[in-house]
Length: 70
Image 1: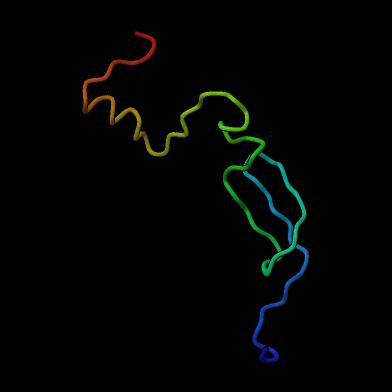
Image 2: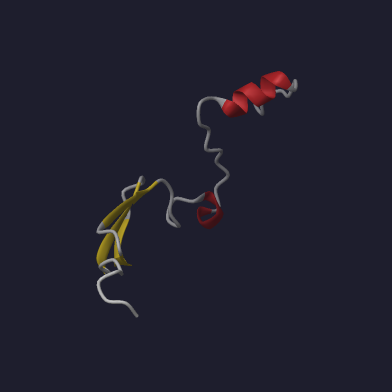
């Protein structure tokens, strides 16, 4: 291998939007993520739609789908 071409590999801290954080190793010292295994609906078992910019409501209006409530 060539010398001095590889990035430094050291301890890293991962921080989720829900507040969960853990330590690992990476070429970056700190990373911020939006969703992790603690808050992801697949792992938590709750049905939750992560809606950004009203896309779900716009889809329902466009295709004539009624709300779940009525």
